Length: 190
Image 1 (tube, rainbow, N blue to C red):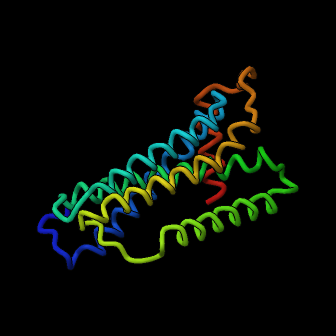
Image 2: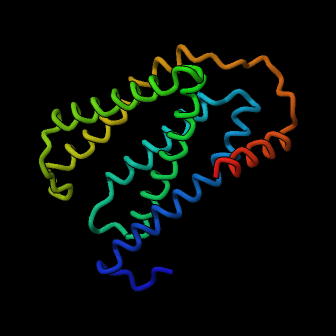
């Protein structure tokens, strides 16, 4: 599909990768959501996809100019898909934490905390351009990725501790019915 890739096609390849990763996340979320609801695994699913996001993003940090472009786009695609799925599950858990009457307040607070964390991280990291291919700067780039992962981990601890899923309740519907309900809700939302 992208044979003969050169720099003139870099933007289109990037957009194509983003589109495919977003579409894949959109297709997987209702399926994973039905499974997570059925087996009371919302928190686990959120953390699993967050961990995959960190792994693929960190792998992307280890690429270099000499890395094949297919590898780079693949890592970016999987990182974006994992991040999108994690955000979908994380945002769906807000309702369980806040209830429908406080959802806007909790969502705004969560967005504010994330934005403050981003601003603090940018100030801490110096907000300057770093060439990742310079040997002395390679560790700095990895440091940035590790700090971002730690920020998410620290902020997710209260969710893990305080959100209690009902592990003992048996789902009323079969897994097929869960899938059907999930897809109907997705199509209604669209």
